[in-house]
Image (cartoon, rainbow, N blue to C red; front, side, top):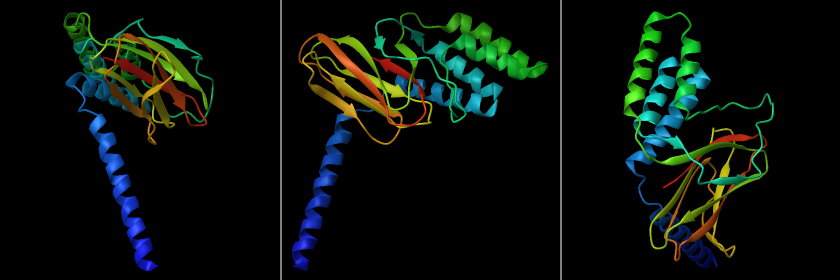
Amino acid sequence: MKKFFAMAAMLLSLTAASAQEQKEELKAPLSETDNNLQLAVQLSRYGYANKSVLSLVEAARIVKANGFEQGTRSVSEGRTEAPATDQKQGQISLDAAKLLADAKELAGKDKTLLAVIKAAEEDAATRGAVGGPKYDVGNVSAYSSVTYRVNFRASELAQVIVIGDGDTDLDLYIYDENGNLIASDTDYTDRCVCQWYPRWTGTFRIVIRNRGRVYNHYVIRTN
């Protein structure tokens, strides 16, 4: 009987390991642009949380250098304004102008920091990429979801990335036009990546679900 239970435990372990390997295979390495997006979000979050002028400035530089321009190709449903709460910790932004304006406010009369900000403003004005990646920034309320509808081309890699503010767990689900679940990322973080190859050109439904008890301020990007 002991041998039976030992064998069963071993089989379950091998099955779980195999499932994990298959899940990891579906997640191809992120591009340099995607890594830069995550870095900008991290710097923004850190800058606001720690009142770090230099972190906000560097986040603004990355945003402009990579052309993270907010687009309109994603239409959200059910997004709400951020409710007031004392439980929120994270704050992020991918608006270069706002990042630099907030950095300037934090800098006060510090001439050195103001000079750094001015240099970033001048640099950003000439380095912004044209037609770069599109994204959206929004809020998803506690225990609720936000939906986007985006068109993807057949047989070409489709990718959706969601990065939250760190306060709650976010899950990401992708559905086709017929309501079939195509891909999902349901781990215990608020960083989600889904990649798939559409069998036909069409509209896919993207659902971001907040599993936590406070709202989450997130960034979503499609390739």
